[in-house]
Length: 318
Ligand code: NAD
Image (tube, rainbow, N blue to C red; front, side):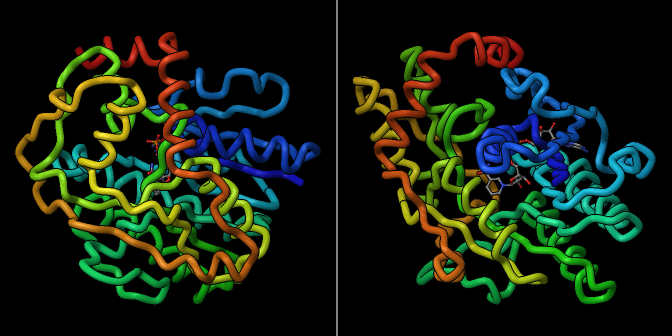
């Protein structure tokens, strides 16, 4: 079996490669990644000889063509940070929409068994009550989520128009090892470790449903194996927490005072709450395995033990 993983040098992608190596030990795995600021070869350490790495841009048809045929193509590659999308939407539209189109064209003209588009719960927009289901309308609020909607719509259209075998996964907020320290949980952990203030947007009451990255990776693999072509699958951890609760939990784990919490001006267009109904994933045999606090403790420990991984990134931002 040949598997291509775009964006495999990023946070979720590299955790997914680890999972696939144990799930399909015989598979030929190729990681295709542009190595933007978020993609790092350090994330793929220890895989020497087990995977092939190709540096390339998903927006370049020529570079993508080198990938040839495969049984499964997982598209993780994207620009992913909402705050950056508010500063400069163009690169999000290019990578997330044009890049997905380029990969879809590749899939149409090659023998690609199944196309798996990795998407996000942010496509539903803010959900004041209840839980988003897969056929709910998309209502994106940020240039990031709008770009991910555009990508999804192309995937769906290529399935409907050309019969491309494709599934879409929409996961909630991930956390775990190898997450770039611009996202909420690593920012809070690394600042707490250095006794710096923990910046919390607005009043800290925005709610996210957190999922441990390994649970999401297992869900993506199950959706690829069991999902119905043309369908989307919600993958949530079932751990709704306000940002303030997350900050307090991290401070408690690291034995730091709550006085480190500081409130900063809210993000424009900040969605209040995301929450997913994951019954479709349960129907095809997946549910999250990790308890939230255990996974958060493990994540804190991973950052404590991997200063060599994050130190250059902090330097780059200082
Ligand atoms: P990340 O930012 O850590 O990694 C993105 C990876 O994509 C990097 O390795 C980067 O080098 C690569 N990349 C970017 N532009 C590229 C291009 N033009 N060509 C080839 N490679 C390129 O992101 P992540 O958090 O690992 O997210 C992975 C996927 O999961 C994304 O599609 C994201 O939308 C989705 N997702 C993430 C979360 C989350 O909480 N992190 C939640 C739901 C969905």
